[in-house]
Structure formats: structure tokens, C-alpha cells
Amino acid sequence: MKRNQAGLVLGAVLLLALQGCSTPVREDAADVPVDERSVGVDPRMVDDGRTGVETGVFIDGEGYFEGRPIAELMEDPESVLSQRIFYFDFDSSELSADQLAALETHARFLIANPNIGVVLEGHTDERGSREYNLALGERRAQTIERLLSLQGVQPEQLQVISFGEERPAALGHHEEAWRLNRRVELLYSGY
Image 1 (cartoon, one colour):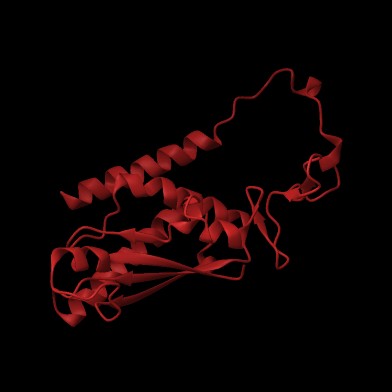
Image 2 (image 1 turned 135 degrees about the vertical axis):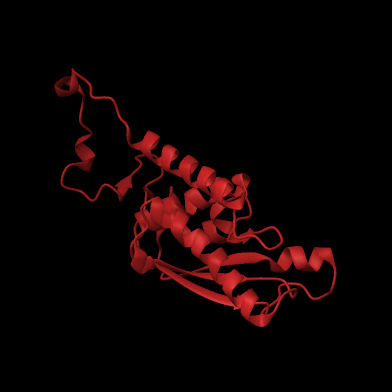
């Protein structure tokens, strides 16, 4: 049953990726106007003409993504990039469908910023043996790694680590603490 759900999630991700790549060919393409500002210029760094602020992505210590500074996006609770913890059900390494959209934004961000890497830390709650929890934490992190890779993130940008139950986010022996501990954390570096 769990394999079928994982297959459906992966299939949905692949379908979305392929759908995003399909662009109809225009017969009148020769008549399409060209924005001269982008000719001979890094297209990620174009002055928007209104604010004098460069938009797009550029890494120089003050990087931008989608027109905003990366450091600001990482801390803004309204930004999808601030969601860097993905939670899992008990004894599961499958992501819920509602978390896939956030993961797609992280993939776009990493693709646009090949200098930035991310460590995928897998964690579990305290139930289960130490060895089992280390393996489960690794499977959870590998799920995130696989989904990011399928969307085009380079393998050298991703590193998987499992801590199992060793680094709990919440202390306690109850469902709320266990829920918070069943997670993968994305730890970015290089921005």
C-alpha cells in the first residue's frame, strides 16, 4: 500500500515536471519582440526599471531569488522557503501531498542557485530501536533527496544525514512530541 502511494506521488511530481516543460511552438515566433535589456546580459540580473533593484537570482553575498534577498526569504514566515521542516507520519517515509508544493519551490531555488547546497537531516521519534530509527531517518531524507533530484537539483547540492531519534525537536513521551520529531530538516549553506 505504501509503495503504491509513493508511486502515485512520484508519478504526480513527474507529470507536473513534464507539463511545465511542454511549451507549444509558435508559428509566428519570428514576429515576437525581444527585450533588448537581456541581450548579452546575465538574464538573472535585470534591473526592473522601476526600483533600480535587480531581480532574479544572483549569488554575490547578497543573493536574490524571485526578486527578494535570499536571507530575507529564508526567514520570512510567508515565504515557502522558510518552510524547511517536512513532517512524516508514524513509521513512514512518504511525504504528504500538501508538502510537495513547498518542496517544488525548494527545487526551483536550488536549480537557480547551483552554488547553494542543502543537508537533508532525517529524524524520528523515540519509538523503535536505535538502528531502526537511523534507517528510517535516512529513508525519510532520501525521499526528499529523490524528489528534489527528479525535479532537476544536482546531486552535488544534496547531502543526506540521519540522526534517528538522537536530536529530538520536542521532549516528551506523547503524540505531540513524537509528531514534531518525525521530520526532515533542510539546512542550507552557501547563501
